Image: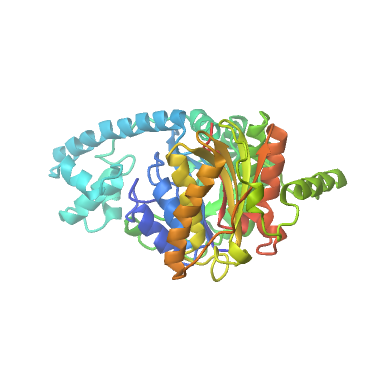
Length: 479
């Protein structure tokens, strides 16, 4: 695993578009990544789609700038629902505050004899959020400074003559927004708090934990081994998840590379595992109306009772997963809008066509299956809450919104068969006739099936942990 959970695109202050950033991540050898643009989730959908094509495991994210004196306090949010109305509403306000600040920076620079215009800065942003790095780029391009760092040192950094502060969300509201959007809230680069002593840092961290903070970025691009040990100890003391990343911005910050930061960064695989486990538990708990624990340091082995339930569930749902499904059993079945269904469809002859050349291949027919599932969601046919694409079949959990399952599955089959056959230069039937459907009545059945489904790649021996399989997701876009 090569993991980087902190990076930025042109949607905030990076120099790569979301698509370019994912491709750069692939070229850098990353297997797992998260996009964490400042105060926006505008690039998440684009990055997710490209990550699927590239075979990189992906998490949605953002980085919220919160109030702090004298240093900087940023809250990373992982696994957030980028369509959450409360989150988008507050981020719009933050972006408005940023827009109100930018003309003031232009005015201050003018008073210092530096002539630039707001349209020039907006052009430098490439259409994304306008921030100080874009002012720095224009200053370099116009010859006022030699480097972007000089632009900050002379004009733009906090305390310098052209610096203008902007309104920010409180740390408490930032954490609450992330968690309400289904995400995990993590304190970014704690060194940038600029606390004078350990006691002050401890007091700030304790207050953030009381506000609902769930993680700490212990592995960072410029941390010394001593810094990392120090923050790991704090994370252990407060029961926080551990994350890490390069804070990659592209050419805006030369010398920082994806996955390795300034050269010594290595984010352990346990960071991804614990983070995705926390997100999965939160999603499952929200389905039953409970509250998921913020952190569980160690997974406990399943009890006999749990194993018995899983065995019975597997028997009831899949019977013999290698037996061809009988299309005659699926004709004219009754389906009803508003109900949840577990769906399984198999490749003809159980040929391993959907994941080519191993689970992290790119491109893959698996991405077309996901595209088909989401296309029917966009059409209002169903809400797709989760999916797992296996080499010779796929599982999905959907809430039917209109029409019938037979019609929806027929549409999905046609949509995917044409594209996959074209990709693989093959002819003939792609899918086995018919499909398996099971109505999930009640939260317990839904949660149990999701647990079973997401562990399918592990049972098949494809990966050691379910989080390592890139063609699976619990989305919870459905209301």
